Length: 168
Image (cartoon, rainbow, N blue to C red; front, top):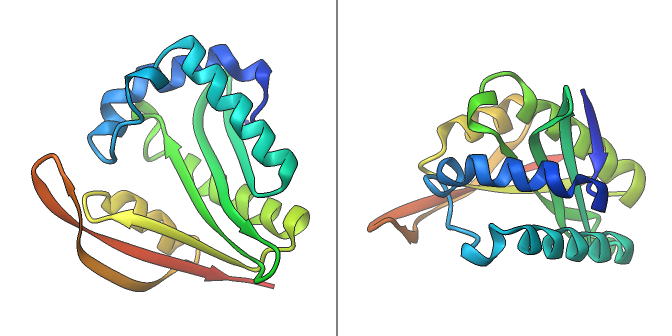
């Protein structure tokens, strides 16, 4: 098991991961759109992620087990002025419940602290994803607020909880 910075070498693996899990991801969050789900779309996504990583305002990583991407995680909106950023992750449907989300969060916390001097992370989770809420709580995140009717998703209003983790 290895958590690596997203790079061009991951194109085929990431494309496979996203295609295989599209329906699963889109059952929980809004679609990335049809254009994303092509080799060119994923290639452009990787290129964009690399640029943002070089600029220091985003970090994207992939968790690889036995030559397959099983999860991915990112740090977004990295702000050195207030030492905080947003965190997010996705786990393949068939890999859910195996601790990969927790592993990604642990790695992202380490990277945020060591590379970006971040000491506060924020995560947003829609109400339709109790598994993600459980992972965040297990990793020491505390809910800071909940907004009901945050988004209309698949014809239903969903709330969203914001979680924070502070560390030194």
